[in-house]
Amino acid sequence: MLLDVSDLQKSFASAEGAVPVLRGIDLRLDAGETLALTGESGSGKSTLLHLVAGLDVPDAGRIVLNGTDVGRLGDKGRAALRRGTVGVVFQQFNLVPSLKVADNIALQARLAGRHDAAFSAGLAERLGLTSQLGKYPEQLSGGQQQRVAIARTLAARPQLVLADEPTGNLDEATADAVLAVMLELVRDTGAALLMVTHSERLAARLDRRAHLSHGRIE
Image 1: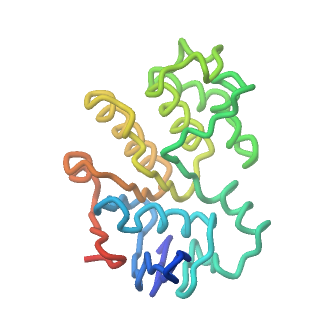
Image 2: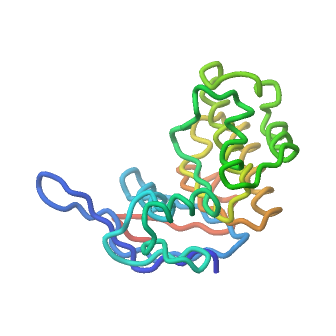
């Protein structure tokens, strides 16, 4: 088992007091497995991804990733986890504006010590980015920037890919093509994929589906 989430709980403060977002989440994911996480806006999907990625800490419960208890890690340990084990595709692209597309794609892999120029070039080709490699992010459309962000994550060949609406800025045909590349690379590298999506069509292409409602998985 690659990922084991048990009784995960998280609340956020408000003027009226603590607002529960996750109310005891249990979730398991094996290496090579793909899971679609669905649910209404505000149901806690992005919060769950952020906790698994070590971008936030839970109030209670455990997240064990590849044998490591994420909750016991400090800031440096969680940062190292994101460099070497977990790859995250955010709704925001988070590209480095001063770097060209080729360098943005290579950035995460370099930080992980796994940069492979040929592999990155192949990713760019499969995602339709070869002609954009010499450009800066501001010169790209939103859909192209999203594909660069996906390529950057996959270039590092993480064990777990967390994707928050990774095709939300793409048209239907491009979304299908990009998801196909993600699924193929996950299969080829033995990684797992946990993907938040509102698309029933895309969710149906993954191995399993978990629906999040009112802070619990149904």
